[in-house]
Length: 351
Image (tube, rainbow, N blue to C red; front, side, top):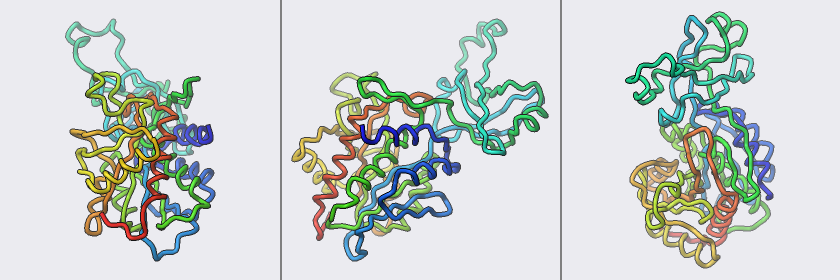
């Protein structure tokens, strides 16, 4: 498992939208075969050293941020009121462990507090939990203790307190597969192709702030100005609650190719080319028509007269929760598909 340590380090890294610095430092440790630059928004750019600047430019993208929370204020008895950063289902947040970054860069562990059932009325027990009513407890007894002893301030970023593990069947469990698994795929693709001569110039981007409006990609794509783009995304798996005919993102069934989601209708000609390449190389894939959701492709495909863009999704069970499951085989097949596409793009590409 060539890239397992990279996936582990990237998912363990802490970085909600706007606070991706730790993720960038991990990327620097693993993306060693390319010329790397970082802009003021923390978007990472990996330039293949064989780029000539006179060929079609292909952008491969993943995003570095994860969903999490931010401290809104600190109560008098030492609890933290917080708001979500990115999309959360309220019921998945209650009673979970988190870590809060203090002013010295140290992560303080806490738990999303709940009222014991002994103190709840029947109506309160039946009421669905709401994030707006939740607080985080770090084991303090006063506001002064939180601020002075724990060093926690208003606006401190908060992430799930989860560490990467992998089962003996190759199923990984971690936080932040959306989209550290995609960021890992960008790096792996760049590294595997580092010494190969392609028909195109290749630039990998790891964009920020996807979870709050695809903001980093909007900046990154204008910097790269590509002719075509490939987006690697940790896509929500649906194999635990659908039948075999409805399922479009199952673990160990290969990467997902999106025809449509809430942010983009995929260029049919480019998608047909990618599907053909997958079949020719015996790479299993899953077709998907998503009613909602979105990826960095939603911003990328709208720039510079429209950029043909595909999304290669790596299925993740329980995305946007503390614990996700993702298959290493799906990761490898996503990278293999991306590489096969890049190796077969002609010099005179037109879509």
